[in-house]
Length: 102
Image 1 (spheres, one colour):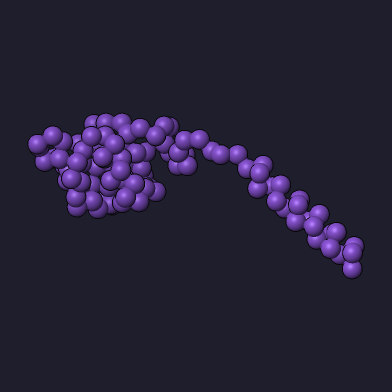
Image 2 (cartoon, helix red, strand yellow):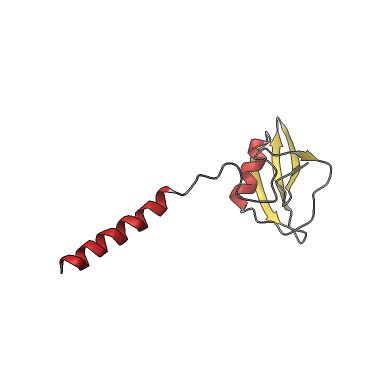
């Protein structure tokens, strides 16, 4: 019986050390993004967009837009909606790379 307890304890200790070996990944988990900051571009890149609506809204807010509304993903994978830049209401978009389109 003592042997089973010892084996179980050694096994548990080995399993626990794997959790400590995990390294924290810096930056984005999305390989389409080069960095975490949104970039303004003239036209949106078409592609399969992995951003959620909340993430797209966050990119727009990070780019200086406020009161983001009516976000919908179009047929080309671009999140499109309305937002305010200062006092002006403008059409906005976020492509699969995280670029912000105005």
